[in-house]
Amino acid sequence: MLTTRPRGTNDLLPGEIEKWQYLEGVLREVAELYGYQEIRTPIFEHTELFQRGVGETTDIVEKEMYTFLDRSGRSLTLRPEGTASTVRALLENKLHAGALPVKFYYIAPMFRYDRPQAGRYRQFHQFGVEVFGAAEPGLDAEVIAMMLDIYGRLGLKDLRVELNSVGCSDCRKVYRAALQEHLKEKLLELCPTCQGRYKKNPLRIFDCKSRQCQELVADAPTITESLCPACREHFSRVQEYLKELQIPYHLNPYMVRGLDYYTRTAFEIVAEGIGAQSSIGGGGRYDNLVEECGGPPLPGIGYAMGMERILLALEKQQVKLPLSRRQTIFLAALGKEAQKAAAVLAQELRQRGLSAEWDYQGRSLKAQLKTADRLGAVFTVIIGEEELQKGTVLIRKMQESRQESLPLEQVGSYLEKECGKGVSEDGAGTMEREKTGAQDSKN
Ligand code: AMP
Image 1 (cartoon, rainbow, N blue to C red):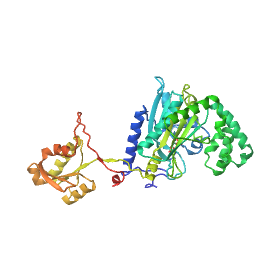
Image 2: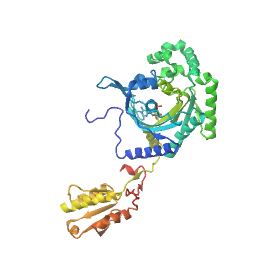
Image 3: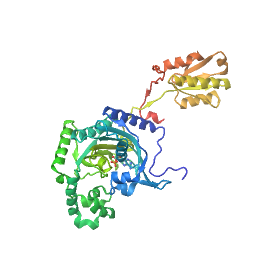
Image 4: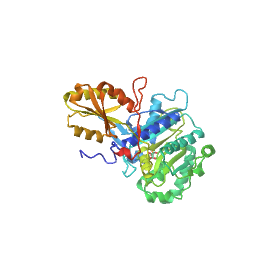
């Protein structure tokens, strides 16, 4: 127990974390290119927010939420997704009060009590964006283009865009009736959860994981047939934009997505050939959600990508990420005085923007050089007691096994030059990074 993490969670460790940092860098960069600002909301919210926001009859709310009472008896829930929290933050902080639209992105852990398997976890991470205050179809196409832009920059291939329109509340009333009519005779064959959904929200039957329910809706009428003229027009304009942007897509009239708040455009990006958990991102429009959460009528659209799944897809597709590794300088000190000199020199090197480590334990030179090797040090500075009295040290370039003697006070500027970097004006230097492949960084 004490040494086992909870089921469905992961430790992100050195060797793997470099990929996360790279991924986060790309996500942040692209988000900014498209004009999004970062938002960070609490990990837990009032349970009601998700019940109302995500929908009472969704799998997430019915089966998957981590809900608990705090010490004052309030019901709180670890967020299972990012949209409801973003809407709450928008309203609470009146972020919609100025010019519209407003565009936010987040990178955050999410929590769902789902059945864990490769690509499906109980704590996972999403990158997501939300735009409020624009209802036009050009934006729908742009968010899909942005997702593909991200995947493309990462090097993912063989992606499929699945597209649907789930209509507005008017279309949905018509569709609901059509669906209920279709399932009327088969009601008892549905799983107990879906029997409940039949009355309250039959659309949710589409994302039931039971095979029997899946088969019962396989030949159901599609929502496309129930779209009102305005939703039909919106959907066809989204498709015109996608064609203009040369984005191929597959219409999937049965894709309703697992959250209740979607209206009109819904989409999912599927990575072919990566296994059962192939959805690497999805989203849609939610033109009624802000109002349902107690705000003004304000259209919205967003998506979320599963970061674990992106990394899994990259691995499956054997994409080598251009990971960087910081060069390190090791200071080997022999004797108490030398150790003090090493402590001072390490600080100086770091001030110059160089990564430096020294041996705190006063071990033998051989042991210290071994550590330098293990750390992959590019240079080792050997500070010996005798040389120190003369004010000099030995500098060894590790790859070349070449060493030279240098006055201690020149070591900083020498290494700074050797490591090929300049100190920026504010003194906070940036060290040149060594480019290595994803494989190398595993060491
Ligand atoms: P959703 O919030 O359900 O629309 O999911 C958006 C994306 O998050 C999906 O396309 C997946 O990539 C990812 N995702 C959803 N649930 C999980 C999970 N349990 N574990 C890992 N990734 C997930």
